[in-house]
Amino acid sequence: MALRSVWLQELTWEDVADYLKDNDIAILPVGSTEQHGPAGPLGVDSYAAIALAEDAAKETGVLVAPPLWYGDSPHHLEFPGTISLRTETLVAVVKDVIRSLAHHGFKKIIVINGHKGSNNPGLITACRSLHEYELPDVFLALADPMYLAKGIAHIKDAVEHHAGELEISHVWYKHPHLIKPEKLPSNQVDLTTIMSEFTNNDLLGKSGDTIEVFWNSREQKAFAPNGSFSDSSKASPEKGKTYHEYMVKNLVKFIEWLRINNGPVGGM
Image 1 (cartoon, rainbow, N blue to C red):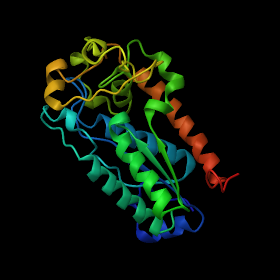
Image 2 (tube, helix red, strand yellow):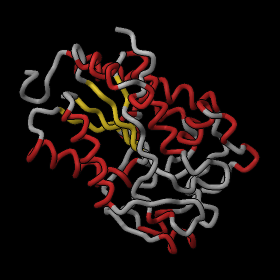
Image 3 (cartoon, helix red, strand yellow):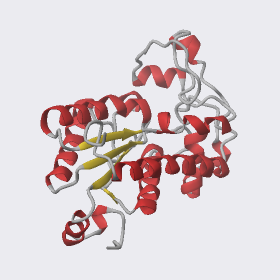
């Protein structure tokens, strides 16, 4: 049956019940509302997750749950407009969403994280805990551009970190009216000096040995006063299109695999 929309919130409960007769896959996009420098909107991470979820769903015919626009963003709170959930709140909300989906018969759920490493601790905790202790028969997966786009990262001209060239390009491609091209910064925060040689200066580059260093919002405002960590002056909608389509292709491949497999044990 062809659905009127891939978005759960745009369907009736009867539409969803009909979908579940022959399908059991759902996508949950999770992002954030946080500053992304002078050129990017506060919703960059959410727009990224939503775009990936929607386009992968359209190609595969699966359903997408309403997006979560808030993430784990305390380190950005010195910048107006940022809204942050505590890690434990993110865990609780994601668990409740997945529990609800599973209750109705969704057995394969893919979480798409647009907020990279900051959301991952909470999302991994939620999925791992649910699958181990509550929902052993529900397949849970987590997709993140930080890992999903390694193979296309060569198109960037600068190292990629917060408000970087690729994530700004991504939103520029999907929502051109939201980017301020005249404010794209060319400065690059020297994270190696601030956080030692063991920092990961490029989230989509080759990484050597690393040690995680934590910083708070006041420290971030001091070392990145305009909010951006990265030189995004070479961002473009064309790069965003290439970046986006590469990740959608990977997601489609994964969903097609998931249709005929049930997880690490059941699918073997």
